[in-house]
Length: 453
Image (tube, rainbow, N blue to C red; front, side):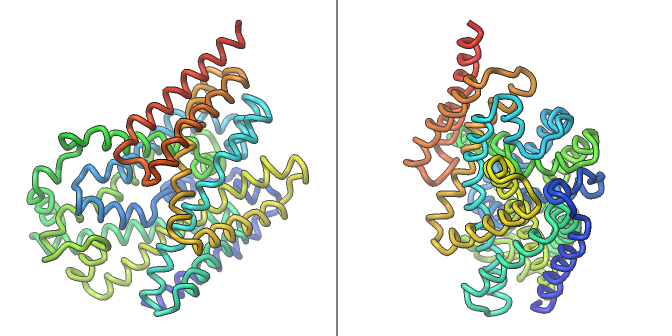
């Protein structure tokens, strides 16, 4: 397995170095020259959030709490891609934007642009740090390397090939990573299904049938608010995200961007629900269900060592595909929307920000779980601060005052919750998240009315 991981990592470094030949301008670096066809736009959009959370954490949560635990990911995240194709892809692509804060600057003015940029960046640092740790744990388990060395190795790999080729490296490596992920998830599901039934289809069907009615219920009695809140967070919260929109902007046409979102959403739901189904059937494979690592335990119990290697590569592909996009997105915003007005936009500045973001996320990872969990939780601020002025700004542009009021009040209400309920979106998510969105909407409409009067 060690050599497989080394060769796999070497492939991505080679792709990153080779893709740097396509980079001559800042636009080449951050948007692949706006040349991505469907064959590259689709896998890179699919890779946006398909990481360790989808493969491992969601499976653990479903094994413990049933189907409702999949509301945030993969169900909410998959629906988000479908909504992005329907609501955002075409109008935003036709504006020829480079970053999402560009939209706020063009629609509401420079203050809104800078505010959007500042609100976006911090959450990515926690998200990257969490992905670093997820892959470092695998590297440590396979190689026996020290925890610190494993973490440094993972960060160097993710930052290295992203630094070399920018969006070209991200798109090309994502295509390889998503191909490996699709093969790995389907193969593992088929083998485990065959282990519990007469063939893959029969086995997977048995996993669903034998699960308790409570486990198969998406909206359990007494928990519908929490589940709905988690679903809405996944479906709506990621719409105003630079990692998502940057991939849409890189497509060669609005139609490609739209189709890629729709197809990626369908594939996300299809591939993401396979680990969920396996988790529901875990009692058919395991005598004792672990609190963490349910899917790896099932692979070890019901498949061959070769399949274990494929599963390890699948996890590696999923995590790396998340790391590279999570690094490139905030670095692009920092370079273009916060630093370029003063220093001028350049290829060198964008590359420097990739190194800064990747390095800062590494520091966050070393600070410990509390630090990166708090920053990762701030990722949710985008939903309550930017969603209303983004969606309404496309179809019903308001005044700068309306946008800033919406962003400020939505953020203030949510931060009040975040500072007292750091655990995130579950439990109190529905009243606080929807309440924050409602206040943001009222502020936007009120701001527009005040201006018109």
